Image 1 (tube, one colour):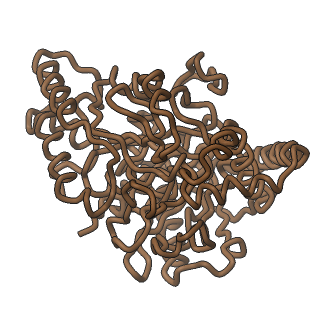
Image 2: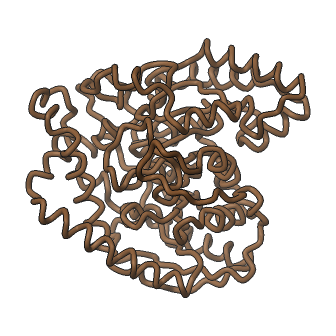
Image 3: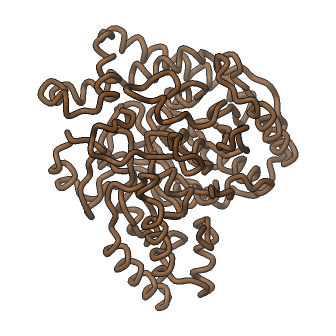
Length: 464
């Protein structure tokens, strides 16, 4: 593995003169050369442009022009977020290349460039952030670095696997039903879905207009705090962006949780038996670490859990159909089998179903807000199982693809939620917990995740 696994460590080394940005980028590209054919992390690599940007970063830093903690740091970007460096495909044969060409850099990409970050390439995704891998299409199949027969998770698959293997130090994913948190959990890294509206989505090809989030994926909660501080904040180009002040997320990471009230829902019944034998003990040990950091941990029950999960899936596929209906009619076979299946389920819902789902969603959000008057955070499993095998996803998204997952609830609520590694299954695959907070309380969520990581090293473990 690379000498520097976190953005925080690499930034400190850059400023101490122990490493250069060129060396960081060359090391990341060398990892990609060695492993990408096996793991399917990249759809497109910007090797030459990244080396030029790294040399410029070194010159800037030598001259005393410091753009912040991302200056000179190699990042990977999920390929539904537009960049001026190359095409945006959404890992689909259908997306018109002119969309990305006309869009150029998304708002979040412009902010990363302004902070001195270096983009090393575009990473694999589920088709349009929805359809599972289709081996009949001409795209890489993302594989889990802990077990190449297992899935890397989705839909931000390549970003999760790339961070875990050092092909870049951090990156961006998107999350509509768990697409940041699932690959973070399955690949053993940290991922944050911010509050809905916290990060502008302009320049990101939509999946669900009322559900999409852009967020950071990295080794540590501290690294996620660094990235969030750069990409968060209002932008008028996104009608869903909220004009809320951006907090000092890194400054909130004190390592202590004294006085914090954490509610816990183990979601055992909702897991329907899809629980790895090692998961309960790993989860209880993680709760003990949070208590040791000073938090008061109490049991709670998430309100309208099944209803909110249903809302997320119904709204996701119906909003996706609104986007893709014309292309599905004209180019049905160009879509992957799983994408066709999932978006196609929307034809069984009516406009009245969609409106009712949004009404139920609001009821759930209000009930959750009431719960957050008695606790500051809620902790649940991200998944009660490790990554499923790739073959279990074919030919379409089967039950194994979502068994044991608990991410959709927090997408429907719009709450800030981090996935943090907590140990391993009996088979040696990563397990994770979710930490969720009130709207705009990313600082509190990250503080709890960081306090846990200051006392554990699961986020620093690496696949062989």
